[in-house]
Every structure is written in C-alpha cells, then in structure tokens.
Length: 177
Image 1 (cartoon, rainbow, N blue to C red):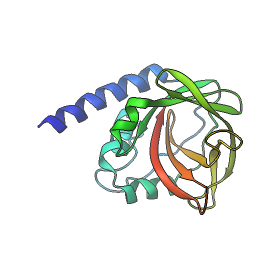
Image 2 (image 1 turned 30 degrees about the vertical axis):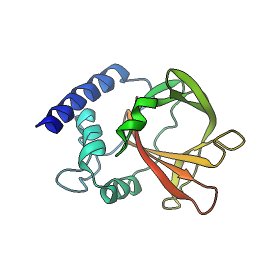
Image 3 (image 1 turned 180 degrees about the horizontal axis):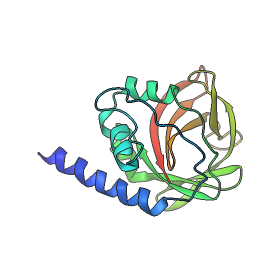
C-alpha cells in the first residue's frame, strides 16, 4: 500500500513540474511513440504519465528499447530540468537535475551548480544514431558522458556512461523541463 501512495504522489509532483515547465524549450514536432509494453510507453496527451512510466513501469530493457526508438529532439537552451534517476532514489536526494545554457550544461547538486559540460548533437554509444551528448571532458567528471533523447516535448530520457574503458551505462535518468 505504501508504494502505491508514493507512486501516486510522484505522479502528482511530476504533473506539476511538467505544467510549470511547459514552454521552456523549443518543442519541435514530435510524433507519438508506440507503447513498448502495456505499462511502458509515451502518453502524447499526458507528459506526467509518460514520466511516471519511465520512472516506475518500464523495465530496463523496455526503457532501452524506447530510447533506441527516439530521435534527439531539440538541444535544450537556457532551461532548467528536474532530474529523476531510475532505480536509484537515493541519488535523487543529491542530484536534482541540470541547468542548460547555450551549448553548456551544469548539474544541480545539493543546491549548487557543479560539473560543467558542453552539449552538442553527436553519435550515441547506445546505437550509433544521433543523440544529444553532454560531454564532461576536461573536468573532474571527464570519464563520464551523458546522452539524452526527447521522448516528447519537455521530457528527455538519458543515460550516463563511464567511458574510462569501453563505454558502459552507469545510470539511466529522466529530465523534465
């Protein structure tokens, strides 16, 4: 019972974030994506439901498959995103999201803007297709690279990779603008 209440509260919180953040990035044209499964997919008319699915209903394999079906979408500019880490609620106590500038990004960690990075469209480690790359090269997180793709306006799915050897996924996350 407690888990159901937490999920309902999270859905309400996400809906509020999506409503407040509407219009902070160029939406572009996004076609509705098919559902990966009955419990994992994109709700074209309800971004909060999409975020809820990405966080709680999609398996790792379903999340990965959905990501592979996406295009990069517009690179966020001058926008703040709330961040959610899949399967790691403790990380959300520390990491709150990202702040995008023009070609730059920083992470919001415990109220501070830290770990600056450059942002550009590049090739995905996941599937070799275009993605938005968040590149920490040259900084303290130089071994990390993030990738994001737009799920629908205001919602991006992402991966953090350790690239100190062969690239490997270290985290899956969602950004809500």
